[in-house]
Image (cartoon, rainbow, N blue to C red):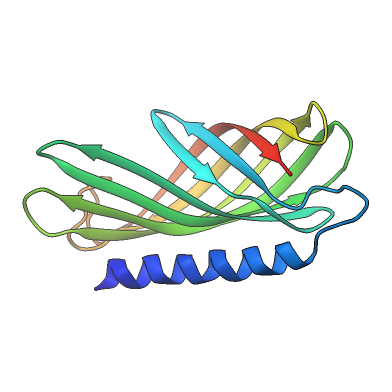
Length: 169
């Protein structure tokens, strides 16, 4: 039941953000939304950043790992970037939050919460393509059934880094 609630909430947020941005199409040709993928360790995440203002993006994010006879791990979240400049190289700060949903083939599923802060920079080759790197400091709130960090029912603080590429429209 908890997983369905998280998925439904993410769909509602994504839909409402998408409608808001679609009505805000800019006649001057500024970026309005994009498709992005990030690589963090061995995990791949897909995001759809929406430009809320000229310097702020909000991106629903999803990632999935599935292993036959083992189970799956679904990552759903939101990432907010606040750009501190608008040149070819634009530094940013931001926050991220989400749910990490583990569904083993045998046993009960577990949902962990995640909240973090981040900073990085994005290099734009042109108006439509950019690459970036970010450093993160994340806090994970593990459920009692979680085996994710070997710390069930407790908090875990970790640092991370990610590289990404984005296509903007």
